[in-house]
Image (cartoon, rainbow, N blue to C red; front, side):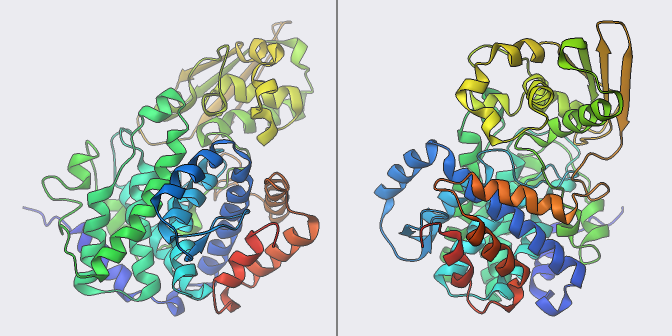
Length: 457
């Protein structure tokens, strides 16, 4: 009988033994790249009206001077700040994603770790280490899964990663670390039902799990115990939340390849599963120069996961949550405006008859790929009224590690995101923020970073 690896103990050893000095320069650089990216989209997320409703609810859960809400700066208990900031990072579908794991790793992780680091006056080196470890835990658990999403993997794996990352920041080891992970596991939440319905609760599942990670560490530090066999036990993650798994990615990559270097940017504020549509249409239009009036139909041939996530039809009375996950609306917005930005999901755009009519010409089909968690390859085909057909096959979509965004494109996205915050950041404050994150490892107290995330400071 072959030996079955003990996944949770492999992860615990990794959390306990990895130090900041162990991180290659490329890993530190990648962590700063995606901290910058995630902060930008989190600032932009302040523009969504539901933020006010969450703040109203959170105000009932106690007062505190531990951590701040990004942009508006309110001081709250760390769990409350983490919940709001986590929601802000994910509420426009603009945050980065680890494609093999189907996990948005930074949303739960960064909101949780920054709030905890503020409360405990931790250094930015501690934050970087925590982020790297947290992303490893979240994504390598996710990458082991061979079945399709039922539960919302970004929130669930994100919470386990965030609890691990907080422990790494604080140097928490041994039984307390085990208990923190077990207590985090006991609070995991988030399903794909919100995704199917286009509910704003999808992003709030991120916020809830960001708060849960902090609670888990606080309880473990107080001496409370949690379950231990949380991955492979009879009711552990792999048996309860997923249908099938293979531990090879975790065994082969842990400690050899830091996963923060394998994360994809989202150039556009839509589900990543729609990015192949955008990338393909941009390439075809650049090459052939057709107008929207010439288009008879558009056919997208995507993986089973692409069909599941963005294969939904265009319809009247869509809200932004639905439209961001609708291939037809995404394609129509790109073709009519030349890009896809946060303003394309305002109500007047969602009601635009031209977008709905063009979006109805988009048809999404399943390709021959068997992997239920793959987001590539994608084929995009445009047929004109004349009968002419253009098509492109994409192995790697713009923003992936194999087809990365340039530094200029990263800064352009960050600038657009900060400028769309409410209230917006000006050029001076955006420049200050970029400089501070570029020099992140030199910051002795994370509050020096958070103070520049507040627009009216």
